[in-house]
Image (tube, rainbow, N blue to C red):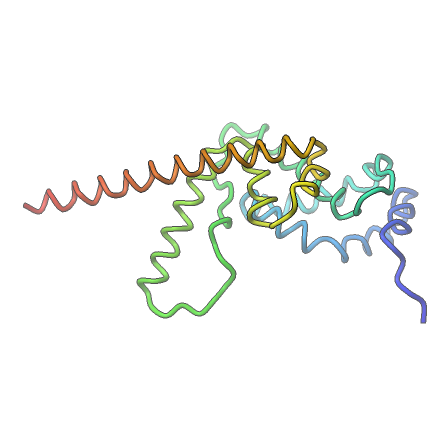
Length: 196
């Protein structure tokens, strides 16, 4: 029995125009790219981002020197495409729609489901206040649980830059969440006062 070709072998083949090799790389890595894209942008945009990433992969592989994981390189391509999408739009309307959702689990009652949905929406609004760089660092480090070393490699920035972006992202998220909670509490107070 022959073993499956390595990422490096497939990358060389894809760079030389081998479409079946591109299909094999897609099979190996599309799920991870799709999951990341869905956390970073809306579901429909994530599918476009996935396709753009793999359509441009053959040309981009000319820049890959074989160091580091190929998946990390592919994620960097996805991030570049995502950044172009964000810059091209005047407003990123449905960004990070899936971020606050946890993996499916058994929910015991409608109140718990409502609280989870409200938390997801609150987190989404808070994340939308972050710059693209801060949001990307937060999603990669905190949501995808990647090390700052790996994130630095994906983003092609120094590790210290990743840590700084993550620090500021957390500060801004904390402030946005406090502001959001205060607004919700004030709204509830105004509604209850209107009853009297």
